[in-house]
Structures are given as structure tokens and as C-alpha cells.
Image (cartoon, rainbow, N blue to C red; front, side):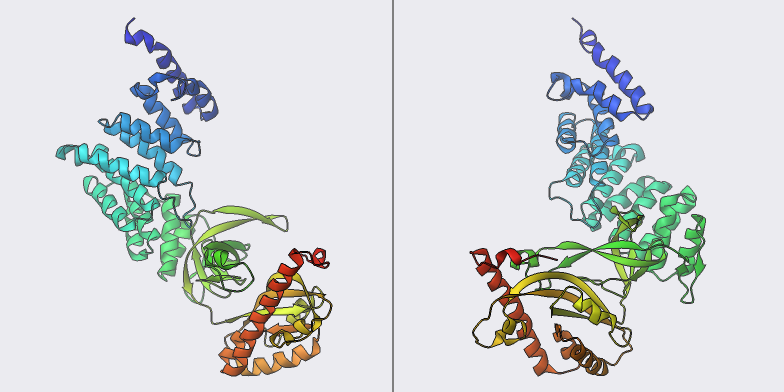
Length: 479
């Protein structure tokens, strides 16, 4: 029987799949195509039309299981066909774009696979085809995108520029070059690339957002404000010459952090990189002032002016309202506030917060973590640094946090006022070595560090004892 008769069923299905794709019905398209998949039909890797349609549908549904393996298999099977390589790379890049930009890409993820397939396809092209915008130019461009998503920024710039050498009037490719430069924080180059893209594409939304981000990063408020106005936003210039929109609701930014060495998380977790969510008061849709403190060590903290990327990495809800979470791009200006880490013992829940409400000089107290520990009364009072006979364990709340003191406040005077306030709050024992170091009292700071370590060691030791059968173990709870 002729091969065209054997494949007639595939051709009919591909036609129906094409119609479903045009109608935006990817679920129906997959339902039609699934019976011809790699595990169901031996023709999957040998029928060119089936392979291309499969890759097209993968590009439309980049979260589909098995995408990377299937795209690689089809690119390998049709290695001599540059169009198949392009389709495979398109699907892989779309999958790689699902990874948030502030998270490290997987070592052998879709971005790495796309960059490799594109390079191999380019190496097979004859010289004249490598200069063809629709072949070599496109492969250079898709490879540049893959390299950007894989964080190989220098190679990404070179590949994207090679694409533009084939077609310097392609506005989309200039915009992609701007994305590479923005990702590497080369904001001057990113601004130039996006300005070129705007001349070629007009007021496209993605271009305008990136012009605003780059303008803010470079302190060019008029450039950023003009781009935001073109997006239809009611922008004003602040006294500092930067864009400002009144009444924007709070948002969150996500920052990478390392362990602070405190808090009892353990050495392994303390060394691990983790994200923290910080509240920000926006001045524009992409920059604002941080209004909360970090529990772990980070490049950003309360009072810093920060810039974030325009696409959220998630959403949450606060007081019944949606709150977007954005990936942090960079710190525009460090705040002058002093952020002083503390550990405290409170007798009852809320004792530390009550202290914080009365702090002098407009200082603010932030509680990061509180947990109930069973400590003997003398350990809790500070005698854990001296040998003593332990009394019956009592519940005490071990509280971690930071006190933020405005930069204009004299820290020596603040220390005196804080000591006086602590005498009024006898249920709180506050240990804050950073304040003592800042005022130059090295001896007191050393004792405070010892007290901090002693509190944590006592809590850990008591926790271990409770875990092995102490009658008070059921009383422990975590706040």
C-alpha cells in the first residue's frame, strides 16, 4: 500500500488539529493528536508534518510534561532540517520562560537544550544561509533568548547581535537585546536597545515597560515618566525628578537571602539560599521603598529604594485585596536607617510588641519569629552563662526581630532611652549586640553576643531534652 495512503489518517488529524489551534482550543488539539504520540505511534519520529505540529502545540502549552525530552528527540531525528530545529527551540524557550527570572535555571533545563540545538543547527548551515534573517538570523535570535534565560549573558549579547546583523530593522530583536541587557543590569545599553525597538515597533506595551524600568534605574525620570504616560498612567515628577503615582497599593518584592546565623534553623538551612517577601510602598509601578525588614541576610532591607521587574512571580491576598509579588531587580538607593537585629525573651505573647509601640525617636520594632521554649527562670534571666542549679522549666517566648532606627537619631541617646524603657517592661529581656557595637561599647557588645548564643544553646539543649522524654515537651509550641 502506498505510503501516502498509510499516512492519510495523520494528514486528516493534522488538519483538524490546525483548526483547533486557530480557534485557541489547545485541549481539543491535544486530544486529537495524543493517539499519535511517541509511545502510541511509531510514525511520531518519522513523519515531518506530525513532528512540526507536535512542536507547535508544545510551544502553545509550554507547561506540558515531557516537553524537553520530546523537543530534543524531534530535533535530533530531523537534525538536517533547520525549520524543525527552530520549532523545537521555540517550544523549549517558551518552557524556559515559565521559570521566574530570579530563580536559578536548572543545569540541563529547556534553556540549555534550546541553546545547544540552535548552535548545532547554525553550524550545519552554509554561509549564505547563516546570513539569511529567516534561517541563520532566527537561529541566532532564539539562541540568544535561550542563553539569556540560562544566565549566560555575555554569550546572549553576542548571539543577539549576530541576529541583528542579519536584520537590523527587526524591532522585536532589538527589544530582545534590551531584555538581555536589563537582565545583566547594563541599563544604559538596555535603554538604547529599547529606544531603537520603539522607533521600529511603536508604543508596544513591553517596550514601554522596559523603557520605564531602565529610565528609573539610570535616574532619568523624564524618560521613565514619558514611557509610563504612554502606557496611560497618571504620572507626575517628584521633587527628586523621578516618576510618582499617588495612591498605588502596597506590593511585595521577592529577594534572595542567606542565613543570619541566628534563629535555630541549623547550619545546613542557614547556608542555603532562600527567598523572602518584603512589603514595598510603590512610588511607580516598578519602584518604591521597602517597608519591612528581612529575617535573613539580604542585599535589601527596610528603607531601601528598590527597582523590580514588571511581570509578577506570584500573587497573594491581603485584607481581601490581591497583592502582586515581583522579582527584585536591584537596589536604587540604600536607606540611611539602622536595622538592628535582636533576640528577646517575653513572658507573655505581645510583651515585645508592647515595648515596640513605645520606642523613642520614631524607631520601629519588627518581629520575625517567636517560639515558646521551656526554660528555667535563672536561664531566662541571663544566668545561663554561669553554672547554677536549674529550677523547674517555665514557658518563655523567644522572639527574633529587628529594631529600625532613623538615620538622623543619635544612637547613644537612643540606647539610654531604650534602657530606661526596658526598666518599665520587666517582662522583656532584650539582647541587641548591634546597637552596642554601633555606639562603640565593645565590652557590652561581647557580653550581648555571649548572652544571645547562650539563650539559643539553652533553648536547643532544652528542646533536645524534651524530645527524649521530658514531661514538659508537650508544652512547646511555635509562633
